[in-house]
Image (cartoon, rainbow, N blue to C red; front, side):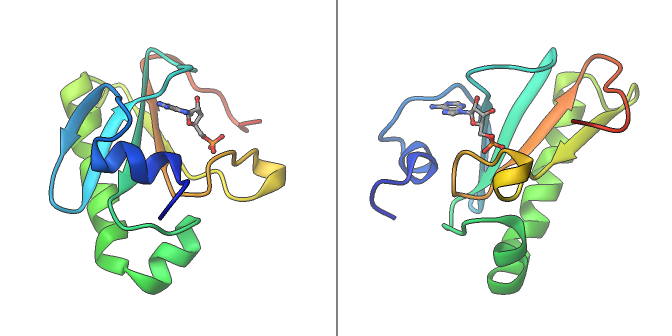
Length: 114
Ligand code: AMP
């Protein structure tokens, strides 16, 4: 999708620190990390948010979840615990309209969030 930052990262047109990729997903480090591990996992296909992706490309959403778990393992936080966050819409602070899961870990994440 033209003018989509994360489509451009998935295409390799904008640089990012990619930690994992496969046919359906790309995972890269967040520019402004909020935890020792903060990786974004995106589907290559464009969808504005997680609900839209679930409806239109459910296999891509499963691939995002699988990639997130593999990133958590590779980052060494699988045993200590980690969180997969899909900010959706204004009140959640979603700032990029291409669905992305935040993989967060490496510290006590607290609850409730926000
Ligand atoms: P959200 O606020 O949930 O939409 O998350 C968007 C995230 O993308 C934020 O955590 C930003 O720090 C991150 N971000 C924005 N631009 C880039 C970029 N070029 N490379 C990596 N992360 C980015």
